[in-house]
Image 1 (tube, one colour):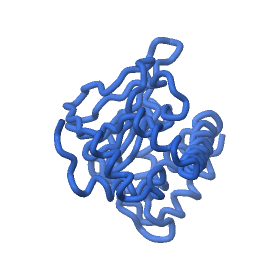
Image 2: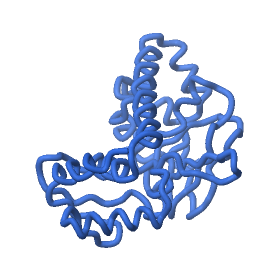
Image 3: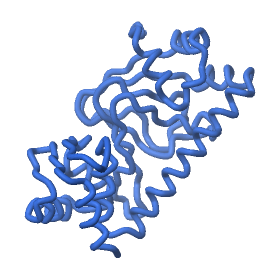
Image 4: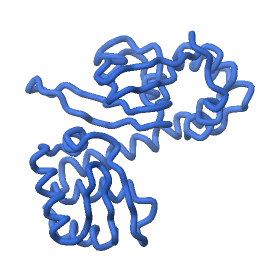
Length: 231
């Protein structure tokens, strides 16, 4: 087992799930956690596998992939550095609902579910806080589902880009968290559709694009443009 870096404890405490944890309690959990290194395309866990851990991305990115009824795969979420994922299975138990694969060289912290649950069961207040955070996450996912099923392609892409902007009232430079093909899949678009939308935005003077880096001089103008392309 590789030693855990000193800054991992502070990274975890910055997440909503662990923000209320006392330092000593978190350190005891970290003593039984380990770092896992993945190469591009490596699988961390597969859909329907028994869940025994959840994870924090220390570097790189993770794609969460679900199998569709047609047999095709869809990226349902792109997990970035310092993000937790698969934590919901701690409360649901059972199996992972998706497959997790690395995009590029990636390192994650593997946190054991059994010990995590044991600590929470001994501390009801912490358990209530965890459930509240998961409820907030559920509301976010419901919003995401609405965007995929109701909003136009333009609105989905613009909403995604605006979420990357620090503020909406000033110019922003944002970097796509994954390859354009992965972002397209995340938004329920084909890569060709994504490219056409970005080209339209460029021609309208709303963005400039340099590989995965986008310069958005006026996020509010981009928001208004999307509003004119409602379903």
